[in-house]
Length: 165
Image (cartoon, rainbow, N blue to C red):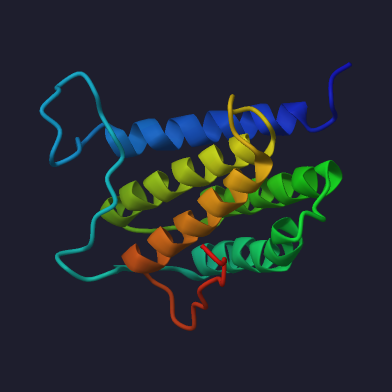
């Protein structure tokens, strides 16, 4: 039996893959000597964080707030499968909002695509679609991705997460 969220997960997966490909196409990792492997690069704007717009800030704050509510229960072992699904769907929804509404200059957009790709990886883990992982590892991955976002994007008033990691 197919879950109601399967089409959404497939759509989000496609967006995440596309985002990763778009971010990876123009650049390779600085320390990589292999020409057949491309990775999305998180980089600053000539030493400064990239500018954000209202849509990006709104979506990222919603993801951050959802994680902030979830983390205490995840750490306590009281986050069940339905809550993980809801968290994943919420992140997917915010990423879709960001992709649809965010308007950044192309260089900043490339870096954002790397962040979006990492969010997609976290959602895959939360959803049990990454072999050998536990859903709580996806929550940690999402929290780390938000740290990367804060390190690379100028988001006035951004509050980091207390993850205990």
